[in-house]
Length: 367
Ligand code: F6R
Image (cartoon, rainbow, N blue to C red; front, side, top):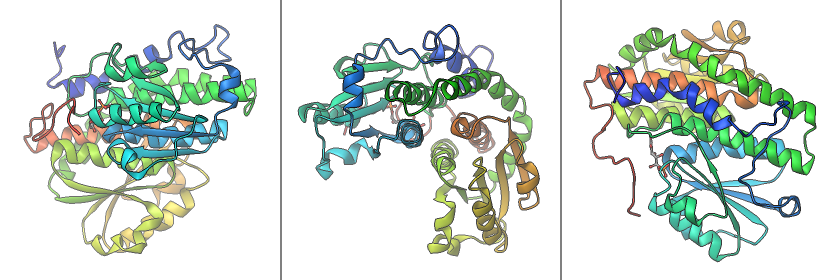
């Protein structure tokens, strides 16, 4: 059932182009100019009444929520807070009937996420679930459900479920923008056109797996590394760091690039690998100055950049990985792919059980 792949994780990484297509299928109008989300029962009036959004999830799904925050705030201009589900209930969150709570869960069975959903409903909020499993507890209890069509995910480390959640957030963000009129039809059509190109672009990245294997082989000899980025690139950096820790057992930290100098820079020493995600044109100069800071202390820097930025960034890093050109908004759906592959190959190089990392379970049903 691994269909010729050595591990489910690799198979699932390769299934992402299909997962993107399937998650978009039936959710775009025939002329390609608008998002159709028949599964959303909220009326236009109810959507106009949303004053704030809370996104609540655990682990990788939480990291998808961090990207979701940028997408929804950027497209619909509604303020969004993000919480890890195990913290949400205990901070007395201010949940009001005009709050939309979005829970994100691949399995739909994560205990903390389910408890957060129930807390939200008890306080009169409307709950939207983004989940991969039809009929799961989260799907059954939410008011509205967007099913990510990633197909079954077997490897403990989430890959295609995460990227499908990103697709779902983009669709939902565009949908809100349509209803609220915060973006015009031409803009929505442009984003959808770019989204339709993503599956092929993911394939193009996967074709470069041998290069990423080399990067991973050299990383696998280290015990510490850093991921840095700004804005959504920081969100992707956090996901890359979690994935690496989870399956390679190499310690890493994700840092907002501008925060390094407030303490963490003390940990940068000769030879330490730093992976910098740089896909946002308006932020790259700032991140480049942070790269100079770590390079001056001996770090070996891999830059993951959007096509078109290789010249500006290339001079400042030791290695460059270029993702195909897409809209800045959509870049997480591509920039995370090389990080997934690096984690996979680093785990392999260390001789770990890639699909079943130690101490972890696929579905966490205890709080
Ligand atoms: C990491 C991973 C976990 C899950 C988390 C939530 O690769 O898979 O961090 O994302 O346990 O699980 P779900 O999405 O099923 O609620």
